[in-house]
Image (cartoon, rainbow, N blue to C red):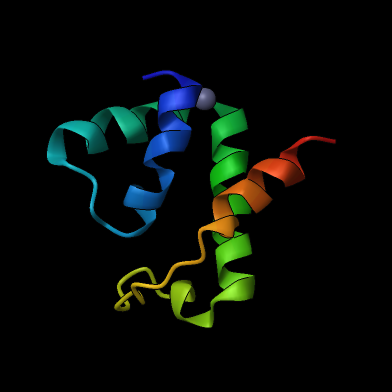
Length: 79
Ligand SMILES: [Zn+2]
């Protein structure tokens, strides 16, 4: 799995909706790549800050996840 693929799967990972055949390479990449580990933490923190329900990954997620969230996080990386 590449870093680009990893980023594409983060939302599914945090929602617990990753297919079984993706989950393993995803977590493998996470264990090997400090950049993606940091990105995942940043992503999670951003979600937690904007959406208290996301603090608990087991909690039911609202269906109206803001579409701007991902682009906001990507924008925050460009500095
Ligand atoms: Zn990576």
